Length: 490
Ligand code: NAP
Image 1: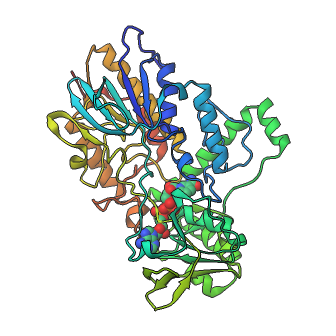
Image 2: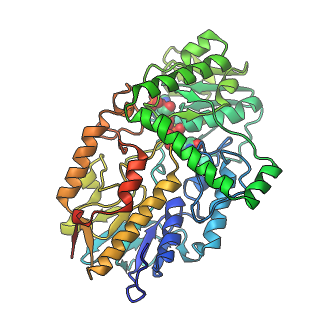
Image 3: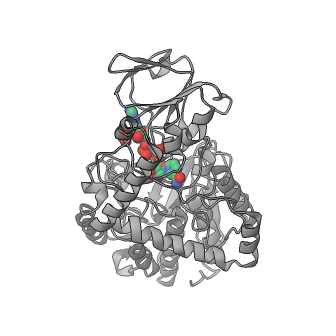
């Protein structure tokens, strides 16, 4: 990739020091950009892996694929790394590449205002004076605003209660009666980890989930040593898992019915093998197409929920009381600890930061609950404002690190083009944005996320899935060669 000439050093603000922010800094520096400042609301790097610390936390994407291209890690201890190991990897990488040095911690960006051709950035915890930047890159992640369920009486509970993303480690869950509301990826990992130590675990399930066996396995010292002396093994692992994900679930979600059927057969076999009780099995059998919600990979969940000290409650929740959860049938389920594994608002992206673009238009109003972007990274009317992991990217059961890196590379190609044209700013045209999103809207209705008969965090206010509807390989190819006719330049 062409390097920026040292004569041109735009001031670049990067918002967020998680995976995308770290990738942005490392790659921008490598491309010759040095005037970089990272704003991070918390006191550590790591993003979602810093925030989530619940028992059982792991990545269900194989680690050698879920690693930065510039920082392969032969030392992963598991095929699907546990949360603390990923957080340590992110902190180590940020330190090694000098990212940590340029992060302003405890600095939440509250407001961005475009005053051509600059952005004014307002931050909490600082003097009221805004700072001026030429380029803003939002790397805020997708799942960071927790959803608290609108269940009456939530504050009345006398025991310990917390959202899964704010796990209270001062509470000892061993030997306690634990209730978990929600049955997503997070809940399955928590249930898989804590049930054996609970007096009783009650899972409050509104919708059953399809659960596939996890490819998890521990790597021996010998395997890790072998990966160090022969790095090709890690590269091979990455290539194989990526091809596997794309050609199985990726194609199934994009509309391949034979693959949907195959995954359905495997998921049903998994359920039958590990849940011998037919009554429990019936409760845990979803009534929608496999892959409609994000597919869960777990080999711990079914054995855990089949234990004698576990139960699944499918009756709706009426209210929370001091003693526990009362369901619509009048039954009180007494609890000591209540975990809200109720997910995240996936429609916010950089919001609630107020972003004001050309002509005073506000990003929150433009999006109005249905965020869209041009190729998931830019918005017409918001010049020099870029997003990593913005709306409609090819997320789902795929390595977010690979996606972030391809988006950062695209942004760098755009910055270099801007420089070559001696432009002060660039932004996608309304027409390019419209054409791209119309094609996407037409294609997304063919995916199982749309017609699979379920509700999920993929769907936004428009009723459409906020996802890239084609194969991820197509996205990577498109991002390699930006079409600059899709942009306005100053
Ligand atoms: P989620 O998938 O959105 O699941 C939330 C759960 O809470 C759903 O079962 C939902 O039920 C339930 N729920 C919400 N409000 C409720 C209410 N008022 N009453 C009863 N139930 C309620 O959230 P998540 O499990 O935290 O996962 C979110 C995403 O994080 C995942 O899809 C994944 O992308 C990511 N994640 C990844 C990993 C990994 O290993 N890579 C691990 C954890 C999370 P309904 O289904 O009926 O709406």
